[in-house]
Image 1 (tube, rainbow, N blue to C red):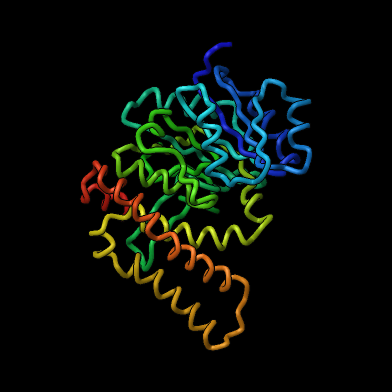
Image 2 (image 1 turned 60 degrees about the vertical axis):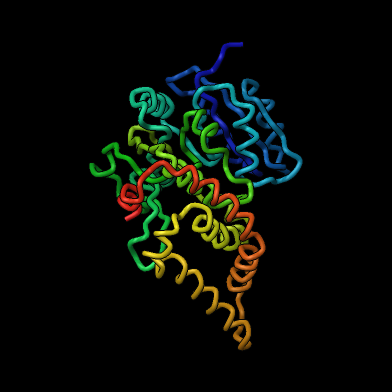
Length: 324
């Protein structure tokens, strides 16, 4: 069996109706030296049978239950044989040059450790879904957002540039990045696990490049929307995990209002509503549960923080420049 240069990990959970478009576009790639590993998170919609019958070249790892994004992808990374690891959502269609252009971006610049794709809307193909991610602490709160989201594609999105983070649904990483900073944090389960990995990478001095020629058409939010609880609970909880694990203490002090105070005051407002008999909606209840989980797991996250901050290689000045 030939050694693949790139391993592509496709994560699937009850996504049979999307797989044909995704996997057909992988077959059409102009770069050929890759393997595909499909991690199935306990699907109940005959996804596995569909792939076995129609895509025999794909290696399938069938999990018995939904283990979340982080753990499932980590299983795939451990099985991958390539020097580069590409992650791809099942609800995507990729341009024939997607993999070739990501590979060229990494092979041509040893200072870059991972890359973000240009993600466009599947249904409106001139609208940006993401041109990389930004993590900002210069507003009233910490903001993690997709660059260019819902904006018309155009010349300003055709320039390659360094960004803070790559969305895990269409990214590529040097395999040694995981050897250096570790895999995706399985305690995140789903939501912001890609930002957490990127934050750890940035602290270690590993840079991310947005590659506009690596085009992906993305349907978006398919899995999370199936269970809205995922979006509210894990999003709220994991956003705080990011601060506990990765934000240097000086920034927690300097940007106290945007970091600690914002999360604290939001939690207090929800708690006041609960104690005063305010009519609680499900979002408030879920957010309170997420804050309880943060308190319960604080020391676990803090222990991770000690290791991450101890191994920080970049200056605070540099980090502030990419966060503001």
